[in-house]
Length: 293
Image 1 (tube, rainbow, N blue to C red):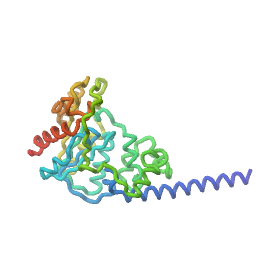
Image 2 (image 1 turned 90 degrees about the vertical axis):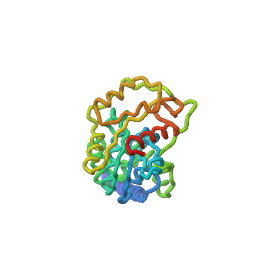
Image 3 (image 1 turned 45 degrees about the vertical axis):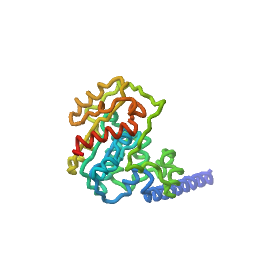
Image 4 (image 1 turned 135 degrees about the vertical axis):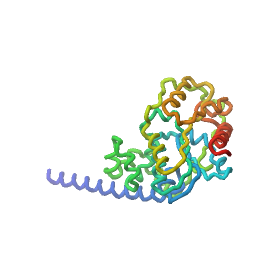
C-alpha cells in the first residue's frame, strides 16, 4: 500500500510538472504572435495612434469598410469579431488603453449585442493565453465562474478550450501561419448568397436596461478623451420584431439608429449581415454623418 501511495504521489507530481512546462511553452508561443488574429495583435502591440477604431461583433466586422475611412485620411482598423459580445469589445478597448494607444474615435456596433451581458465562449477563450501577462485580462475574467480554474490550474485553459487555443492553434501560431483576420484593415467583406437566410425573428429580444460592458466602453472613451460613436447597423427587409431597435433607442438615447439605412435584400448576404455592396453604402453614410467626408 505504501509503495502504491508513493507511486501515486510521483504520478501526481510528474503530471503537475508537465502541466507547468506545457503551460509555459504554449504561453511563450502565444506571446510571440503578432500577425495571426486581432486579439493577439492588440495584446502584443506597442503604443499606436488611430483616428478610428471599430468594435463589435460580425455586424461590425462585416459592415464597416475600414479602407473607405483610410481613403479619407482617417487611420482606421476594424476590430469587430464574428461571434464576439460586448464583453470582448470592452476588453479589446481596455487592452488598447493599457498599451498606451492614442485613439480619436471609437465606433461601437451596439444593437443586438445589448441584449447579452455574458462572454462569448468562442472569442473570450482567445484572451486566455495571456491571463498571467495582463492585469486587464485577469480583471475582466475574475468575476466569471471558471476564473479560478483558468487562472490557477496550469494548462487547464488550454485543455478546456483545445479547439480555440490548443495544440493546433499553438502550432500554427508558432510557425506564424497567417489568417485573413487582419486583411482589409480588419473588414471582412461578404458576398450575396442565393441561399442566404433572409428572414429573422427578434420579437423576444430585449436590450438590457444597463449593459455593463457597453457602459464600460462609454466610460473608457470619456476618461480617455475619445469621441464615442455608438450605432445600430442595418438588417434586411423581412425581420419580425423590428421594434427592438426602438427599445434600444429608448434605453440608450445616445445610440444612433441606422437599421433602416440599407434594407433591400440585394445588399445582404444574410438577414443580419450586409454584403460588400451594402457595407459600402452604409460606411459612406457613416463617413458623411460623423466625419463630414
